[in-house]
Structures are given as structure tokens and as C-alpha cells.
Image 1 (tube, helix red, strand yellow):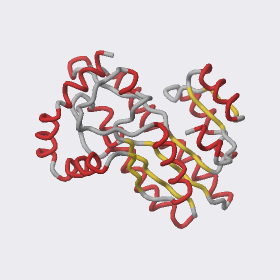
Image 2 (cartoon, rainbow, N blue to C red):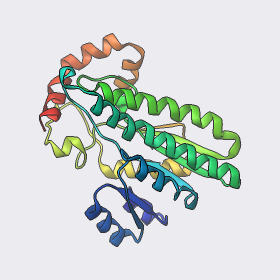
Image 3 (cartoon, rainbow, N blue to C red):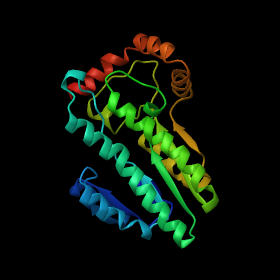
Image 4 (cartoon, helix red, strand yellow):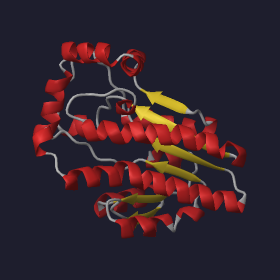
Length: 239
């Protein structure tokens, strides 16, 4: 995303927990690095102070879960809510408030997931946060239309070459198609330029099955049993 936005002419403020990756991206894109952990509220507040300097907010940070229900504890729940839901909501709120006061147009891109459309095994907390982020994004869009501030919920499906599927070397069923990180980056640029309410970065059949799952959870459960989704999610948990 950083590379694609830089090529499109954006001046970047990049943030992440891992300083070595930030330093590399800064050298490559000419952006500025702000190291922050979104589960640390002091870090988040410090990051929010920089929001008035930018006209596009891309909220991309997120963590996944895959733990057994018997192993889930309050600390895990709190961290997931803080990083995946509280942080993007707070940043979008502060960002919108500043731009409304200044009378400046802006764009917010919330990076969600198809997991915000349909539930999957062993991902209760991830589903909950992405469902919440999707609902918040659509409601926020309605609230900000009159202020010329756009909001897009961007929902990737299975992404090859980066992220949890690549990190765990998960073998997808042969009939399940994937998208690339470059596809996601192109989606971010399109969201900024076109301001769609929702943008899916996934093959048409995956989007259709997710939509069906949102309409009929029972049918989705049967389809996922056939696909072996639970076994794939157990592989992510082992990693």
C-alpha cells in the first residue's frame, strides 16, 4: 500500500510497531515514520495528534485470532478489541472532527475483511471486530457525507504473498482463488479516488459465498464444512 500510494504521488506518514520495517519503507518511499503500538493507548493518542496533517487515513493494522474457546481470556479479548476496533474508530473520529472544523475534504479507508461479512470457524473475536468495523464504516459514511469526507470499507479475501496465509504456508483448496498484496494496494487507490461505500478485493465467487453467508448462516456453515475451513483455521492457530 505504501509503495503504491507513493508512486501515485502521496506524501506518507507511516506507522507500525516494527521499527525495522518502517525504516525500510521510509527509505524507499520518502515518507515519515511514527512507531506506535495501537494496543498502547498512550501510543494511540500520540498518533492521533498527527491526524490533522493528512487528508487520507488508511486504517490497516489488525491482529487475528484462532484460539480454542477454552483458552480465550480477558486479555486476549481486550487486545483484539483495542487494535482491531477501538483504534480505527478513535482515529477516524479524531480525523473527521479535525477536518470538519477545518472545512477540508478528506477520505477514510477502513481495511476490513470478508470476515466482516460472514463468520468462520475459530475466528470469533476477529469476526466480531471486523463485523463491528464494517458497521461503523457504513454508519460513519452516512454521518460524513454532508462534510465532503468519504468513507470506504475495503474487504480483502484470501491474500497470497503476505499476511497470515503466506506466513503459515497454508495450502488453499485448488478451487479457492486468491488475490495479491498489489491487488489490495490498487483497491486502496481506487477507494481514495472513487469513494465507494464498500470495495471487495476477492474473486467474484468468494464474494458471492460471503454475501450468501451473511444472508443464510446455515448454508454458509455447510459450505465451509465442505471446503474444510475449520482445518485451515486450525493450521493458522498452530502457527
